[in-house]
Length: 579
Ligand code: B12
Image 1: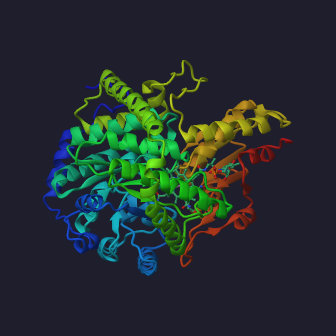
Image 2: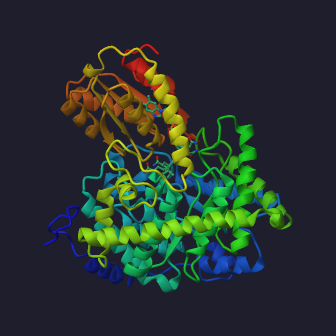
Image 3: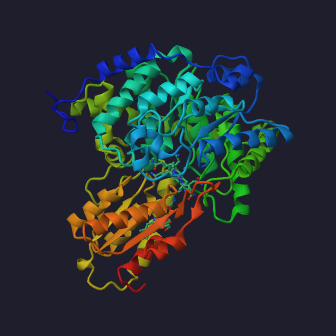
């Protein structure tokens, strides 16, 4: 019997699940990709070692068209265009539709989102054999309800870096199972990855896809990495590879983080990639060429300094608008290659002692966070040799509670206080700035009868920053919204609206399904005889078959009667406040 309040009494045995994964591994033969065949190496890890020796700065790209067929075609075009410009890209990270994490019989029940699906054996094979660019299958693989079969498929076709450890807390649209069932699948897949360790199977973790995106402190980032590494390398016996970067826009901080992440990795481990920033891009795309050049430069120099072997993942300048076309991917890879060619002569001009001192502080704080979390979980009663117990406990605790308890900054003493970071993340600094601006506007609004306003608020996917801003803005004017959370399905939203007696629904959505989601939500509300306004904001576009990139659907949403919002303060108009 467990005393751990986060675990069910009948929690399955995590060690037995790992053993099941080892058993499954016996039927899995690891393949060799086209890139590895071309360079005569057995795996991407070996390829990385070879490139480090040759002094090559590796680059990576993100890709995910509407279908696999379009993605495959885009690869051929990218390869050809890069060849004409005299360079090649080393690896890519696939941005799949979230439904890839679901069993095939549920695919039709959830809305199509941004990114392709791998539907056939041929599709899977083509990910690693269309052009010699090494795939990393990061999203919707291990961590999802389809962890085992996705990991098997990926290994068999020659993918070595399979994600995504940090996505263990994600939910999948329309998945009828619970978190125990989902984590059971994940642990089995981790057993499979452990069994394939000698074949260079790497358990990939892109930190920003998980709890670090919610942490306020870079020390927590490093501490969390140490914790994931302990879980994967020591408890499970697999090998963790870390990726980081999309939410940091200060290049100095980013270089320090790269140094720190390289310093804490075990001998022989190759991290996968460092991501250029995604949040400092403006819709004014010309400006973004400056952002990307600086970002590329600092990441590449930090990699050279540490002989890292991780690739630099450059982000197309249209990031703030939508998913990129293949031409936009080639464009930004061209910038990256040009920056790479200048790195050597700029190396000595950088203030390395300053950057290294910051990295040291991150590591020192990170080690303390790590000690705190291991000790804290042990105290709660977690069996620290049982991966299922660990995953379920941290999933049920959630990121804010973990940082508030184990962080190394100033811990909050009550619910109304915030954790004060030692080295604040860019995400947190941006949040404070946006929150203060929103609060000022909310405070100036003339609000009639806030006590009669009952708002239910949630996100259709993992994107949650706008939701947090709205919560704080509303609270500052005396409205306590009902928070549905993230990855909320339309029926869950409608149930909550009914239960809460909602006067309006506030929906944040980003994954290219704004229109289908709005329609489904209206149907669900109507079936409960609820006629209340819906406000939507975020990336208001829709993936449509045959279109290369998602289409803006704000006009269609307005036609449906949805209140389309471009800013969190637009909520004020919805609730009848005069700004
Ligand atoms: C940060 C981010 C992430 C983080 C999210 C971290 C987190 N915990 O929230 C991470 C890395 C996890 C992530 C993951 C993914 N992401 Co993302 N992400 C972004 C990014 C860079 C910023 C979004 C953001 O938070 N902005 C800050 C907030 C404050 O602003 P905002 O959301 O734009 O909201 C403003 C308004 O729209 C409005 N608003 C928003 N919602 C609401 C709601 C109401 C009621 C109101 C009144 C107003 C309002 O108010 C805000 C301004 O005041 C955008 C690109 C970009 N630069 O915009 C991509 C982006 C949204 N992501 C995208 C994608 C595809 C994904 C993934 C599906 C990728 C993948 N395959 O794994 C996954 C999601 C998986 C899942 N399970 O859902 C795409 C969407 C593509 C599209 N449809 O065009 C984008 C546009 C990137 C791109 N160019 O491809 N992402």
